[in-house]
Length: 342
Image (cartoon, rainbow, N blue to C red; front, side):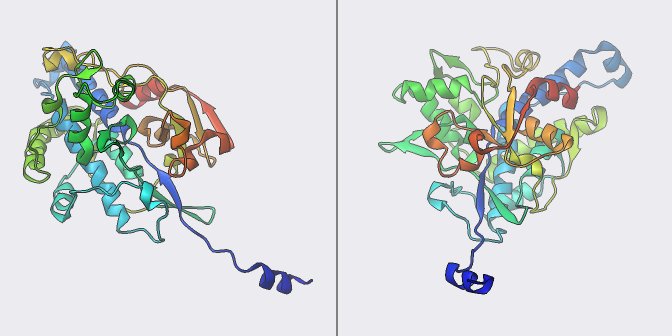
């Protein structure tokens, strides 16, 4: 048979989208880094005397909500720009409660810290070697109608459900301890594996427009100070682009990296003085070859984290499975962050 006859017999191959999971722990860890570095700058007496200005670090909870909102807005914005039909939609989070007013508010944010800008700007649609990758968040999980929080996919629209579940002793012990071990929430107070400050992290009544706008007003003076006094930490405006960075191909397990706990009754400034992320990530893998800059960006963003449970890899986390990756790398998250934030 000639090639024409073979093609006719086989039928045409049709390109379909590849769903690339993204994760969110980099937001809380980034907020810890920013707050810590700002406080350390204040501790430098020579700098303070020279600048005659102390950086006032705002509530890390307000920061966390704003930065999570910006990330979620980017994901929702991209869904309306997908060039191909997405797959595995039954496994994809649909972002309930996120509407046009929310997206408009997010677009009014003129500039954000470097770590947040780098992370959010890297999320986008990628065409690589003729394949199209669509970034999506894994759906939330429930058991018997009860929400099961997971550290790798916490976003603003799930934050209240997350903290309520973590504060509830009836939530399965393994769910609470797993979240605590890989804690994604800066300033979380734990006692016997039960969250103690749920309302501080995410109030019971929180409007995604008015209350989020108030959080913006709390954070903006801090960003202005960073822009003036520590410009390396003030990244600038978010890019309104749909094209992502190859750095999101980098994947890793969560290992023992986590946001540090806050002690009960601890002053927030005292917490900021020590809120360096705990633990580390040392092993990374990638579906495609990355250059040095892309690898470093992927390491610090942590957008490609995978669940610890193997049975959760399919289908949405399938492309994050290290067993199918041809490229691996041994490095240190903490070392990269030291370079980025020092």
